[in-house]
Each structure stands twice: as C-alpha cells, then as structure tokens.
Image (cartoon, rainbow, N blue to C red; front, top):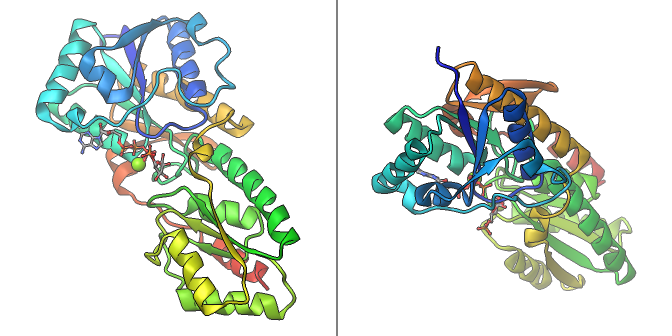
Amino acid sequence: MKKIKKIAVMTSGGDAPGMNAAIRSVVRACAYYRVSCVGIYRGYEGLIEGDFIELTARSVNNIINKGGTILKSARSKEFRTKEGRAKAYEHLKENNIEAMVVIGGDGSFTGAVIFNEEYKFPVIGIPGTIDNDIFGTTHTLGYDTALNTAVEAIDKIRDTASSHNRLFFVEVMGRDAGFIALNAGVGAGAEEILIPEEDLGLERMLESLKKSRRTGKSSSIVVVAEGDKSGKNVYELAQYVEENLPEYDVRVSVLGHMQRGGSPSCFDRVLASRLGVKSVELLLDGQTNLMVGLKNNEVISTSIAEAIKGGHSINQELLRVSDIMTT
Ligand SMILES: Nc1ncnc2c1ncn2[C@@H]1O[C@H](COP(=O)(O)OP(=O)(O)OP(=O)(O)O)[C@@H](O)[C@H]1O
Ligand SMILES: O=P(O)(O)OC[C@H]1O[C@](O)(CO)[C@@H](O)[C@@H]1O
Ligand SMILES: [Mg+2]
C-alpha cells in the first residue's frame, strides 16, 4: 500500500470549542509521522475556492486553549452541488492532497460521504459540534465546554430570579437535540426542562409550576432547548404561562451563541488531542469513511454513514433524575 504523503484538515458547520485543539492534534500527528499537512479555510467553501495553507508543527503553537477555529468555518451551499464538489476535487488534486480530516457535525459528514462516493477520496471525520447529536461517540468536541458555559450563565440568572421571586425561561442551543438542555438543566437545578426528543406537555409544566408555588418555591428556572417539541418558542411559552398563571412574574433569557464560544474545557482539549491523533493514524493505516469517537473512555471508530444515520437517544435515567429533583 502506498503511504499517504499529504493530508488536509478543515473545520465545517457551526464552530465548537475544541476545534483548534483538534486542528493542532492533526497537524502535530502529521509532523510526527512525517506527512505534510494543509489547512483548508472556511470548510467546504474554502475547498471549492482552493483557499489552503501549509501547516507545520509550529503553525499551531498556542491554540489549544483558544475557542473558535483558526481555519474558520462555513456552511457551503455550493458543495451540495455536483459542480461545486468537482471544483473541490480539482483543488485537492492540484495540491497533491491525498486524504482529508473533516472536523464538524452531521451535515459536514454527509458532505464527506457523498464526496467519497463520487471521487473515492479518503476521509475521516472528527465530531465537532456543541449539540452532541452524533451517533458513535458519547461526546462531540465542544459539548462539555458548552454545558459549562450554559450552567454558569443559568447560575447567574438564578441569582436575579431568586432576588425578584421570578420565573425565568432560559433558551439553550440544540436545534434538533436536547443534550445541552437536559444536562445543563439538571446541572443548574432547573425546575422544568423542555427538549426536542420528548413532548412533556404544556399542562404538565403548568401543574409543576403550580406545585412549586404550593410547596414554597418563590423563583423557578425552566430550561428550553431551541428545538423544543411543544412547538412554542421560548417567548410563546412565557406568554402561555403568564396567561395561565398570572401570579408568576415571568422573564425570558436566550443564551444564544455565547454557548459556542470560549476557551475549551480540559475535557474537550484532551478529547480533541486523542481524536486528532487517531484520525491521522487511521488514514496512514489505509482506512477511510470512518468517524473517530469516544466510548467508555476508549477512542473508537464508526463508519461515517452510521454516525450520521444512527440517530441519538436521550438519557432516560437523567430525565427521571430531573423529575425527582423537582420534588
Ligand atoms: N447533503 C449534503 N451534500 C453535500 N454537502 C453537504 C450536505 N449536507 C451538508 N453538507 C455540507 O456540510 C456543511 C455543514 O453542514 P451543517 O451546516 O448541517 O453543519 P454541521 O456540520 O451539521 O454542524 P452543526 O450542526 O454543528 O452546525 C454544509 O454547509 C454543506 O456544505
Ligand atoms: O447560527 P448558526 O450558525 O446558523 O447556528 C445555529 C445552530 O448551530 C448549533 O449551535 C450547532 O452548532 C445549533 O444548536 C443551532 O441551532
Ligand atoms: Mg448538524
């Protein structure tokens, strides 16, 4: 088997803390194994434009602690077209790039699988998204940091909620996944948690808030995932409670993109370092179409197709714990 001599790395989709640590790891692993490494700017967008940079072990000094991504990220419409992917392939060929590491979420992996089908181009995925909505890994890069950011913010909201005897609806990210809401909700002691995976019902929420009042709680926090199943956004939920429980003084806080920024947690830095090394080792071993991930604290690999299609399930035990905690 011919040894790969040049590997490219990109970050794609929504950015996530820990992406820089993963870039660093891929670049340093390439240097260790004496393989050239090229960074692709702005995900598939930069691939289509041939916006590349040579990366050496020294190019990634002092980035392990930085949020965002030095390679920048994008959502590329053109890569969804055959013509766009043909341009991308030409740039890879021109630059003698023989394999690619894609750090991103399910959409980025879908693009990688299609590209591999069309051009037989070797690809490995590193799961990088705060949403944690990828099968084949218990943790995606950025998820742990985002949880800590959300919990810190909700703690602060709790201070003011408690001083004013108010009910706060706090919206956290998670368009299709409730991992951030459920875990940050339990970690911050939320009274109710609304997630896309389960429709707990608005009646149930009203009953729970009434009970909170009856049993002596003067303030409450309800954590709502962006993609909550009730179909109501956080402002509509607040209005619904105001109309049905006028005794409550309700406020809304949307945490938004602050959850995607900031210095990565130690967990995310270590995970990124492990996954980056593994991705390069798999490519040098002649493997492709795999996503690296974590299971029982072991680095494992799953076929990318399975990682995309496998779906994600919410932890029922955690839901039960959350329920018991509202007593
Ligand atoms: N079906 C597809 N065909 C080709 N390319 C795709 C396809 N789906 C997604 N992509 C490419 O992957 C990019 C990133 O996908 P997407 O915007 O869904 O983010 P993601 O990787 O899922 O990350 P996150 O959900 O964390 O923001 C898209 O902008 C597009 O360029
Ligand atoms: O503002 P953007 O980049 O469109 O992304 C928002 C989405 O990205 C995510 O944070 C994932 O990165 C989702 O939870 C959220 O809905
Ligand atoms: Mg996604």
